[in-house]
Image (cartoon, rainbow, N blue to C red):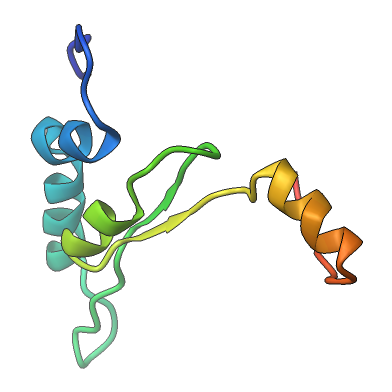
Length: 87
């Protein structure tokens, strides 16, 4: 369990300093798959607006998925783009 962080801190700084990304990289390293020992990185589900995609990638090429910002979806739909939305 992480301690409560007081004051202002960026999402990237929080994720770097909290250490869970490094732990996940270690878990993935120790849990390789198949005879060739393929490394499968963690996938992190983040809330919209949360900025941690790059810091996750820099820690073991982890992936971060986020729902699209609704303003962007509305704009794109007006321009004729199609989306598959999932909740």
